[in-house]
Length: 566
Image (tube, rainbow, N blue to C red; front, side):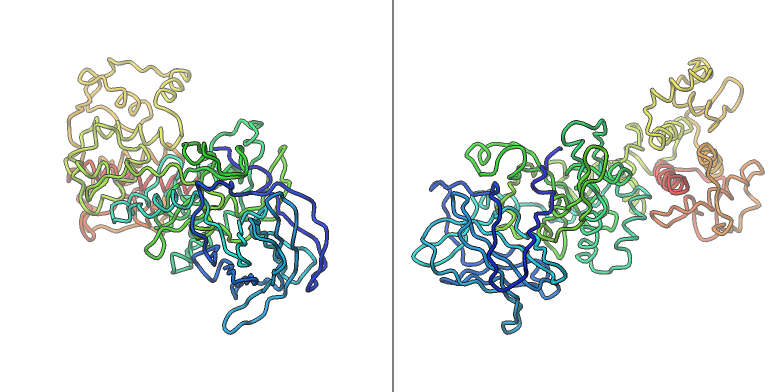
């Protein structure tokens, strides 16, 4: 979704002399305001936390004539500038205050006793002491501040009640959380590139919350907002996590997809949230049409951390911008204003619209697992393989049954399609263009396209010149041979350092020895297990029959091995 305008991606910086009470001109700008309608009036509050984590976000308290800003001790702000504008966008107050200790808290205080009652909009800017530049924390003065009877208080956004009802009704049961750790078409959390990057960013951290902060910061620093795509000037419309990582740029959906994929790769439940954000394509005020409608113009994330859902918007916390084919801004992470944002602060400029969880089963198992009968050891891999499109429809049940020769071919062709990113129809057309014949009469006992394709690719052979025996069962050594051929098709080799040893190696048929050595030496870098192992310690059982679930799991592991190797 193309959903962000430059007003939120350009760092809103003000160059001033860092002095205690400096006053200076600032050009007028379009402020993000809450529409002044009595229908939306709610009880004002005396304080506003920008984040539920006091170590990350500012807290603003209003007490009579005094506005106090509590500064997290880990932030390097040395001074804070506060600007107030009235409802006509006129600047009516501007002051810089040095932070100071007040008991156990770092604070900056502003005494404002001369303004008349009314609605104002608050802007906060910070300085780290290294330059005269102040950076905005609350963009475009978007915090409504009310003065009544000589006292300051904060207006509750009209979106708060809507967001609160949705936000606090979300599922947190184990089944839902498991669902939000799975990969999907655009959130390829098990892709080797995603997994390796997540490990690099957060693998050394133990606390899931710290992992999420590190992932948030990495995305904000290393992904650029693609204004060319936003303006329909780019043909690249792929907003998947992998493409966002590959190109280094995207619109908000790409930011959110990559953030979710990295979080899920670290085992953290994460979801994409669709909604409406002010200042984007549709105006800067909350209107009746927006509040009562279902328009969507923005995407962000929620992650399940410390037993609660946490709001994360990496798009709005990043100041990187790409336009006209070049990088125009590389300021990276602005701050963590939209990490673990409080619902009160988030509702000022965000409205949750699409929060459907109808695709999560209510039972204790997910999708294919509900009727597939998978063994407990295989469930996670089965679900992942099904989500990624590896498992054909005819293999979604009786997963502990022996797999037939034809079924294994169908799985193998899906494997090739998944790795090449080409449809089976495209694979067929390519073979025909290369001079191969897809003769349906190749075998007298089957006309399966998957069998014909697998035969052309050299993955399998018939039991005779005209017979294939499609319903015959596959032994473990036969499976090893076909998996070996799949690996060779993509040019991979196994490492001798990973060789396993088996006490029944002499029972392996001579034509399968090399294949067994290969496939049992391939190590899946994502799940950190061998593609194929023995049935028990040091026993390979070459003549034992192979099952559907074993076939799916080993192909998924081989898929990871090939992707990582390439």
